[in-house]
Length: 316
Image (cartoon, rainbow, N blue to C red; front, top):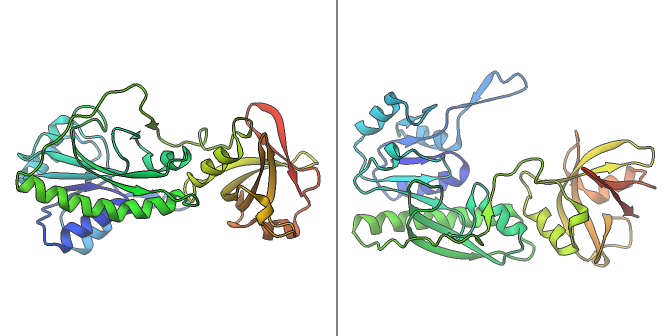
């Protein structure tokens, strides 16, 4: 039995199917309303793949619903595999005789939570990885089965690391299934340390670039740790006082490496200058900052942050 929702999970499911593992059914999120009037339902990437391959699909609204539990029992799965899904109640994860394991996109016990890849990049880590572990009562705290590390390059965005871990994780899922089936696993308890770094869910409030709190490096890491999704953002205020939201997808730590022509929004911080090179204004398409600057009149423009009176002038 396979449980998952986004593209990240599809690669693990594909690896299992194409290697002839018996995936008896898939559990995924209900179809999501999309479109301007929310009148169109869109299936999750996992459902789309499962339907293409003729695999039965379960889409419970509530994981403790008795009809869903009865359907789940009817498949008599020996093992359940979870990749980027929801927190499961014990009645679900304790059901199969071989247990339920999860693939987590971090080197547990670090980065427990909903956004482990983002926070590893935001924090400037040079290494991350994937972990498989048996589920238990608390989120991301179960006994570790396997861990595999992967590098984070200095210019990697979260999108780059996401793709790397997606394929690495799919291979680890297959290895974990094989080892569980052969009885070749020795799960290790995770330490419970208050100093461990969390990976909380991302919201608008914690993806704003708080210029007053950043050095050049930390701002650079913050921007690439949220690129391309959900994207770091800031507020651009013109000399006339008009404000618009600005998403930032990439930056350069050393503006001197750029052309002498205006090609970036340069922002002065306490220890230097950072150049915003890849941006998107509200209601506009993503574009190189150089394209934006050709038609923009930014004399006197500043970047501001919520709840802070200090402003950051744009250096042209």
